[in-house]
Length: 256
Image (tube, rainbow, N blue to C red; front, side, top):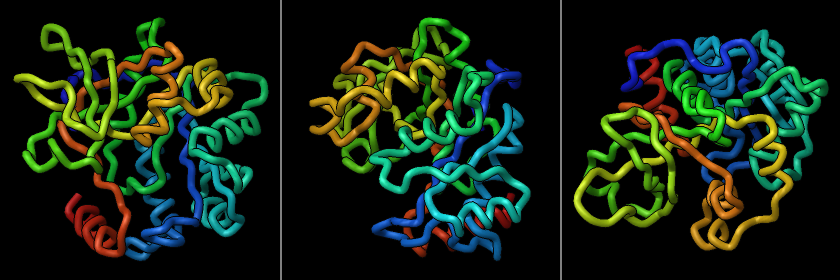
């Protein structure tokens, strides 16, 4: 659930949601088509994104079998180059194919392995873009599990939240506990909303030095002077990476 009580997202009339999906996965091959309660995971993610009601939803895929499943579910699938180095490159190609005239000014990147993500989280990702100085928006949640503070698989965001605001500027992202000192640490959630011009610039940039060191793509933007703001939400969406996660996701959806 999102901490901010506002329900109307920014860019209500000119945002588009793009879900990158590819079958290659080292931990769970064929992840987009893995069944959860008899339904392919990519269709679950499609439905959650549609429930957010922020704009049309596209699946950017590189395999025809994924596109066929999306089309059968009534969704829109855009075929993209299978050799893209990142999801950002994949969503940019899909956007340019779907909207060559530039109608949509904001692009929400929802990862294809979040079958239980709440619609309110997708909406929250757009809110920082209400500030014209923000290039990219994302989400964070306060870390409550002490083990997550030092777990390198949990990316931490150093965010300046001022006067109980639910939106703050992201200063850095790291696999280490940052910032030091007293106070909360924030778990970065890899869901982004880009201004179209910012996404175009981002995918044209070469990988950054800090990006390579931390293995965090978002540092490329910060290294090149782009501004990232984060919206604070209550919980981290459950991501599916293993067969055991598929079982847990099915349980969560049954309870929802």
